[in-house]
Image (cartoon, rainbow, N blue to C red):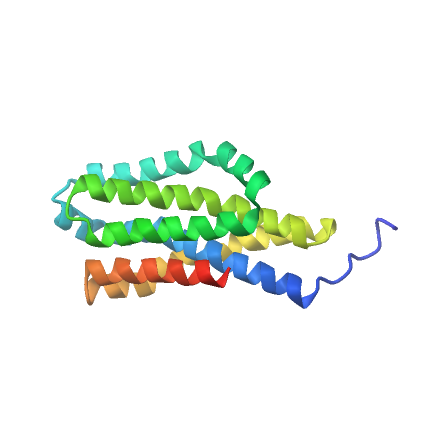
Amino acid sequence: MDPNSPAPAPSLRTWTVWVVALAAYLVGVMHRTSFGVAGLEAADRFAAAPAVLSGFVVLQLLVYASLQIPVGALLDRFGAKQLVVVGALTMAAGQLLLAVADGLPLAIAARVLVGVGDALTFISVLSVVNAWFPVRRVPLMTQLTGLLGQLGQVLSALPLAALLYGPGWTPAFLSAAGLGVFVAIAV
């Protein structure tokens, strides 16, 4: 094959698989950033200083980073689909736990679960890109996945924040958990 020739167009099935995987990542980003929009409410709910709450973000990032190599091994063994489903369900469990948490220990456990699920998701979604797209399109599709997935921040900043400031903490995080379950089913 001539390296200058265009890559064959991906099939409808390829695009469908990618869109579903992208949706899982987008919802994962929403889960990851959801605590950020709840800062003032979290301070009230858990009677915690902002410095304590900022530790949640650091902890979640440490969990995410420390699991990258183990997740790579799990990906090789179980495949992307299984890890995306488990990641979505783990993040949903974290959001469910956060919805009912009334103290810091439970809230910390909830954010650890979100970090675990997040770690399972992104690397698995990138694996989908590598498996389903021609090699020449992988860099572009990887960048599009990362870029479009960040729209999950909009989900946490708009609808989730509206639920948080409207019906309240528990309905907002229960809704986030429900969205995670929906994505797991879609995958």
